[in-house]
Length: 60
Ligand SMILES: [Zn+2]
Image (cartoon, rainbow, N blue to C red; front, side, top):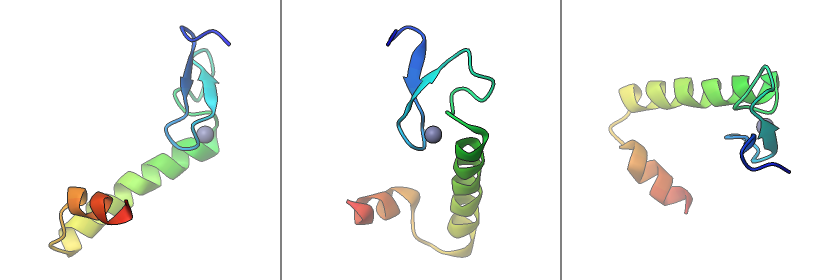
């Protein structure tokens, strides 16, 4: 595995070649999942008073 050409997929952490058409995601599915997370987070912040970093701390 060439570390100079691969990165972990932001969604599933699978090594992704930066030559891939869906990079930095391993697949179109992971790209959609990541976009969905951002969209859901935006709606959640607007709808509730909880801060994003507080939500992340709760997960830990
Ligand atoms: Zn992935």
